Figure 1 (cartoon, rainbow, N blue to C red):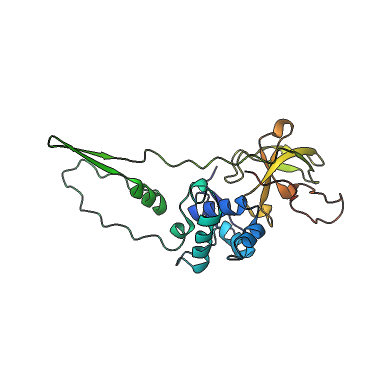
Figure 2 (figure 1 turned 60 degrees about the vertical axis):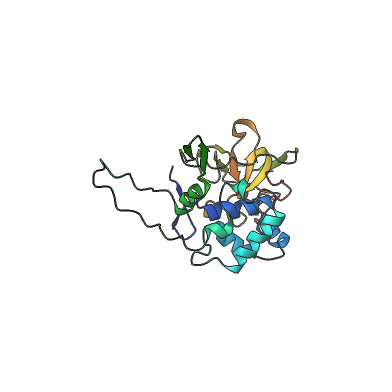
Length: 257
């Protein structure tokens, strides 16, 4: 499975983009783009939030909108920024910092180390986290350095609703299910058309254009699909069979916590 997903213009963006991960967490934590916009005092519009979640965010400078939302989230969003497993919004948008000056290689070394292929924000966070402890005792000095032994895993998905399951009926095309709606891993076990299943909660992950405009997924609780995720707009969501599509999401389904 590729580590990138296609945006609506056919481009490719990394799933691990820290800004996208952080803003998506904020949107989901507040129940959607409209809800986050209202809760934050309209510091950022729902349309702008949607663009940011799709990877179209400020890359030339840290804008006022990013700074205002970041400051508001620090005060009003418990868990921000650590819960998303990514740095703050003001640290991950705008231009990447300049690369540090590297000393000339030692000509007697056996081989140069492999270049660090990690994204700049990961390298910066690791460097900032390195700790140096100097202990002096009897003229002896010990230096302890912390280091990263491997890439940071993607945070676990939230999976708790309000304790009450909601029945939802798939549309005429059925519903594909995935193990993780953020990375689209584990696609399998399609739910057939016109099938009623129980869902536990909804999660915001606009990982592919086909889940637009709402971007929500349901955590399914029924039968062999239990524990898997399906796009909310694959279900009727209270609409009448054969009639117009009026609801892409059943907002009575609680946000996953």
